Amino acid sequence: MARLLLLATSIAGALAQGTQSTTSAGITFQTYDSGPNFKFGIALPETPGEDFIGHITAYDPDGLSWASVSLGYNAAENSHMKGPLLVVAWNHEGKAKAAFRQAKAYVNPDVYKGPMTFKEIPQGTSVNKTHIEYTFLCSKCITGDDITFKKTDTTAKMGFAYSTNGISGTETAAAKLVYHGFGPQRRGPFTLNLTGAKSAKYSSWAEMAK
Ligand code: HEM
Ligand SMILES: *[C@@H]1O[C@H](CO)[C@@H](O)[C@H](O)[C@H]1NC(C)=O
Ligand SMILES: *[C@@H]1O[C@H](CO)[C@@H](O)[C@H](O)[C@H]1NC(C)=O
Image (cartoon, rainbow, N blue to C red):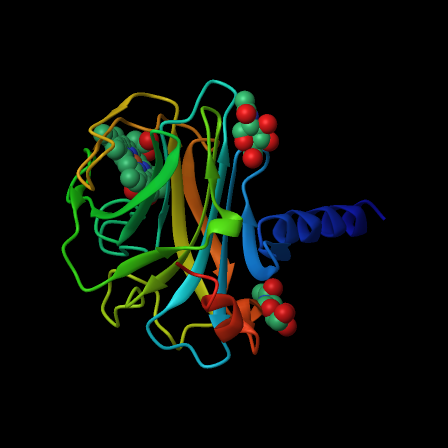
């Protein structure tokens, strides 16, 4: 009996770490939920190409300076921060702004210069002092090399981070980001179920992007 209970508990634990189907702005995402503070969801077409729709939601009562997701995993360095393509969103004068960045070390990541672009989905985007919600069509973001997940993957190892510490230069993609802080609330890994992210409705959702 005790063993059965233990088994049930560990299965529940494993499920809690997985991703679930959620709907926001009429779009169905496969979403990782860290608890109260951070969520990241993805929507994909049935046959993924280079694009996806992403949805970052972050909240902190202490005030939020930036929120970010890492689109990959660097196995050689065992890092979600160093190497993979990072999508970082922040509040610039009441409007969401986002940039592609890449970290070579555990410091403020560089601007990533590549072919990828963002298009905002306004119905799923809002920012204020404590919240960042950013919904975006990410074009040419599934790169086919090691900095992001692959279009044929069924699951993807990703990472997240957000910070309550200062940010400056919010008008440019090169905004200076300050350390997220240590601890599982502020940064960590997750595995996203890409199979569960696929939908035949993807193209109609992608048309919502401006
Ligand atoms: C911008 C997006 C960022 C993401 C997605 C991110 C993500 C992560 C993750 C997941 C870790 C855990 C270890 C690992 O996977 O390598 C980590 C560690 C670390 N990050 Fe970041 N990070 C970001 C930005 C920053 C910035 C701006 C700084 C400092 C200016 C920073 C400094 C560090 C340091 C010092 C560690 C090692 C200590 C720790 O684990 O907290 N990171 N980061
Ligand atoms: C900030 O935005 C969130 C999400 O839209 C909202 O729930 C919250 O009330 C807003 N906070 C303020 C102070 O306006
Ligand atoms: C991923 O999602 C698919 C489709 O919803 C589901 O059949 C599968 O069991 C999920 N996989 C995991 C590991 O949760």
